[in-house]
Image 1 (cartoon, rainbow, N blue to C red):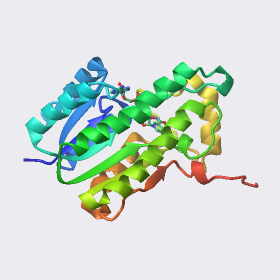
Image 2: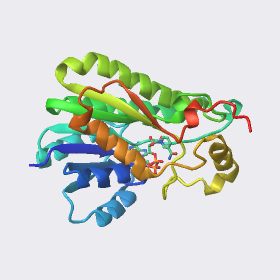
Image 3: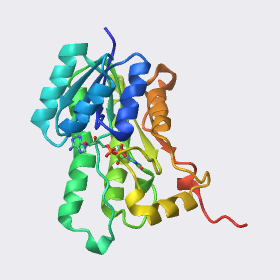
Image 4: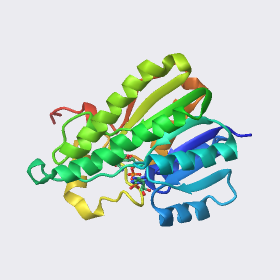
Length: 246
Ligand code: NAD
């Protein structure tokens, strides 16, 4: 039987690219997403592949437990988890309500925490987890008080888990993308923000979802067997860029 990789938020965007890549790499993939419509579209797209599609909200421990149990019934113990479920909402700090902060933390940080605990409870000898952090969680970007805080939290969650769980055969890493344009993560509605990101990115381009998926595939692979607690930035140089003179 193929080893099981669970991809949360796998119905669209980066998560869908990750699911496609892991299927190509020979994993049995459980695609979990809260959006049943997007999940049905993903199922159409990936029909005939070794994948199952399960509707669950990462903030709901019972729904996640049930979905993970169904995935384990289909493929055996969890060997890999990629937590892509997340939301991005950007606004000036003074316009950010506590309610918005709570919602973003709940999905991006608590959701990753719940999925990680569910995977841990259903692992065999080894488990590799990749979290989706963000360049906005590594450095200060205007409008990202809530989103950036959630992603900085994901980075530290990753590091503490790596420290505590190494002895159990668990590796935990995260990828920190810069600007990724997928069908669902479009910046058409915010052309000025997109222009500013590209202008600040040394490579002067956005990142392809497939480039994130390739990095995730590497971190899950045996080639990365001594890598844990690491944050791999995939951002065209965005997060290291300072002033550039002509
Ligand atoms: P996306 O909106 O295309 O995909 C996110 C998926 O997560 C959607 O299918 C959505 O239905 C699902 N989801 C949302 N809330 C959920 C919940 N509570 N339970 C289960 N599923 C839920 O976004 P994306 O751009 O592909 O982003 C994927 C991840 O990458 C996110 O964590 C995001 O913060 C992170 N990221 C994205 C970018 C970017 O530029 N696109 C940059 C850095 C980090």
